[in-house]
Structure formats: C-alpha cells, structure tokens
Amino acid sequence: MSARAAANGMERNQRSTLSAADWERAALELISEKGVQALAVEPLARRMGITKGSFYWHFSSRESLLEQALQRWEDHDSRNLNRSLGEIKDPRERLISFFRRVGKEKLTHEVYSELCAAAGHPQVEPVLERVANRRIAHLSAAFEELGLPETTAMHQARLTYSVYLGFLQLQRQHQTPQLSSEAFDAYIEHVIQTLIPGVQSESQR
Image (cartoon, rainbow, N blue to C red):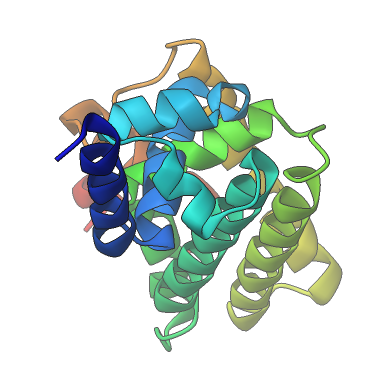
C-alpha cells in the first residue's frame, strides 16, 4: 500500500470515528483554556491527534465550528439553568442551587469567562446577550416569588448577576478562590447569605 493510500485510509477512519460533536467539545475545551482567539483548525486537529481532513468533513470553516460550539455551550447552559432554576419549587432553594452549581459546572463557567473576554466578537456577543437575559429573567422570577416587588426583584437579579460577572473578572486576575476548593465553597456560602433574603448562616441555625 502506498503512503498516500494509507493516509487516505487513515482520513476515512477519522471521519467515521469522529463526530461533529467531538470537534465542538474539543473547541470548547480549547476556548476555556486559551480564549476564542486561539480557536484555529490546524492547532485543534493537532491537539486531538488527527489530521485536519476530518474537520472539513463536518464543518466548512473555523467560523462554522465556532458557531456550532457556541450553540452546544448555550444549549448546555440552558439545560443547567432549567435544572437549577426551573425544577425546584421553593424559590429560595432555587436561588441557592443557582449559586452552588457555579463551582460544579467548571467547563461551562470557564468557557463563559472567556466568552466575556471576547464580548465584542460578532458570533459571541448575541450568545452572551441571550444567556444573560435568560439567567436574569429566572433570577428575577425567583426573587418575585420570595415577595419582592417586580421592579425590586429585577434590581436584585441584576445585582446578583453583577456579582457573578465581577467574580469572573476577578478570577481572570487570579484574585478569587479556585473553583471547587474549600475557600471557594465558603465564598459561595457568603454570597448566598448576602444576596438571598432569609438564608441563615450555620452559626445562626
């Protein structure tokens, strides 16, 4: 068998074993580590240990991969939001769940941090807007259920989300506890007690 035939056979095998979803997940992992600007076909293929021929079997360009990867991330975030803020009846417990999931969804959190750093990118900006609007709407609804007037509930939701965005910025500057660490858990508990009405600390119970 010639070297070219062997290479063609390898490429066909990669096409059959790697799906578009594999490329999208790899793209999100790269974005979480190095940012949106680092996403490129050849480096990503090398990272995955394959040739770039497999890429063009699924995507027409780097931009189409970014679009599909962002859609995958947004869909995942929406499902997580529904679990943390949509399936729990008690609004206080719903809000507590929202905060506590931040440390558990490490990839989602890190991708979002990098997307915020690339907020002016034409493909990133509309995703950030949709995600923020969706999250704030869920938060506002929970605060309303706790008895806050509609306008106050929206203010509290925006304040809560501002705290989250501020945390992302501080994290990029290495000024926050590491995700999933004991110090991070303590920080989250402090935020919960500060922002959610009626939540008591362990010492108050």
